Length: 86
Image (cartoon, rainbow, N blue to C red; front, side, top):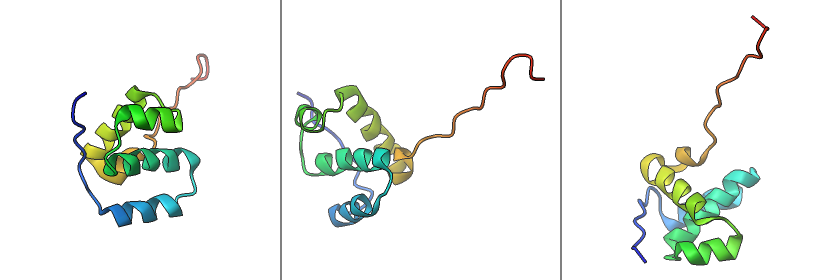
């Protein structure tokens, strides 16, 4: 299994504070993934522990590594205009 590379944008203690203060369930789950990666857990351990797929773990890891906390938030979606509404 390949070694997981994680960018430590904040300290472990700061990350735990972000996690504990977060109200959004989605964002809290994403932060939990990052917390577990900081702790050195593998994708397999995280996946089986919190029932999240390995591709999902890799997705949030990649966004964390490139954008930090901001990368864990949902991106705005393009609003589609229904046909015939113009």
